Image 1 (spheres, helix red, strand yellow):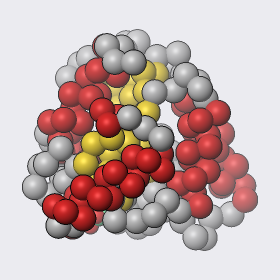
Image 2: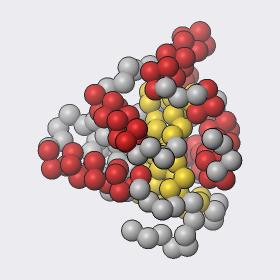
Image 3: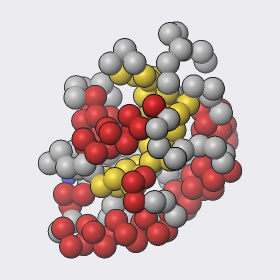
Image 4: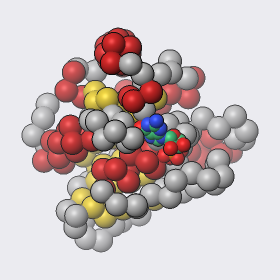
Length: 180
Ligand code: GDP
C-alpha cells in the first residue's frame, strides 16, 4: 500500500489492551484511534496522517487467545511487510509496565530483531498504575530485558500525561533520523 503523499512513517505495535489506542490519541492530541470495544475486531492496519507531516501506522493488537493459525500467519505477514516499508522510520512498541513479556511479546521482539535496521522505541504504558519506586524498578528491568538504551525506553501514562511529551520528542528523533 502506497500512501499519498509520501511521508515518513512510524508504526505502533503492542499486545491488545496495552493502551495503544489511548496512547495514539494522547500523542495526536485528539481522538484519532477508536478505543477497543470488541477484542479482536480491528485486524487491519489503520493509518493516521499526523500534522500533515508523517503517518502513524497502527497495527492490530496481538495476543488474543482465540486466534487461529491463519490469522497468526496473516498478522506476521502484515508486521513483516510494515517493517520493510521504504518510508518506515521506526517502531513504537508498547508494553504494559506491570507485566512480564508474554510469549507474543517475545515473538515480536524476535521479529524486530530480525529486521536489523528497524529502530525501536519502547513505550512502557500505564505508568500511573505503579508507585514511583516500583515504576523505576520495572523500567530498569524491562530496559535490560529488551536490551534497549535509556533514550529508547519511555514510561508513559495516558491518564496523567506523564511521558507523552518525551515520547513525542523521541518519535520526532526517529522521523528526523537524528538519533543513533
Ligand atoms: P488497546 O487495545 O491497546 O488499543 O488498548 P486501549 O487504548 O483500548 O486501552 C485498554 C484499557 O487500558 C482501557 O480501559 C484504557 O482506559 C486503559 N488505559 C490505557 N492507557 C492507560 C494509562 O496510561 N493508564 C491507565 N490507568 N489506564 C490506561
